[in-house]
Amino acid sequence: MTVFCLVELDSLGVADASLRALTVGRTLASSGVAAVVFADAAEIPVAELAAYGVTDIYAVTSDGYAPLAWARALAAVAGVSLVAGAASVAEVA
Image 1: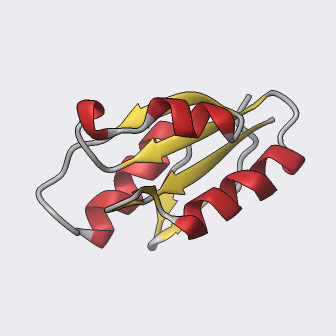
Image 2 (image 1 turned 45 degrees about the vertical axis):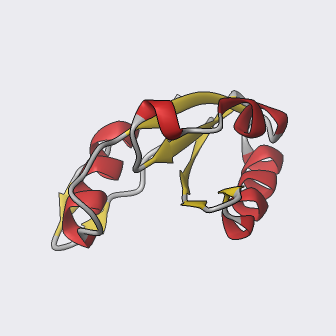
């Protein structure tokens, strides 16, 4: 099972909370950890993510913070459907 983590960036690189989520994701994943980052691809610290076990990175561009748009993008990347604002549970291989 691939674990998808929403990764946030701050002025130092990957936000501390995201690094902790990646660490937990690595313990749960059987086939890899995927990072979903809402930023331009050139801004993503690929080496830092790889050091935390990330095997796939999805860069999603947006016009700032838009929670509903982010939820839809996360659902599309993970291959799940949104129903009444909640993602259906699915194992993504």
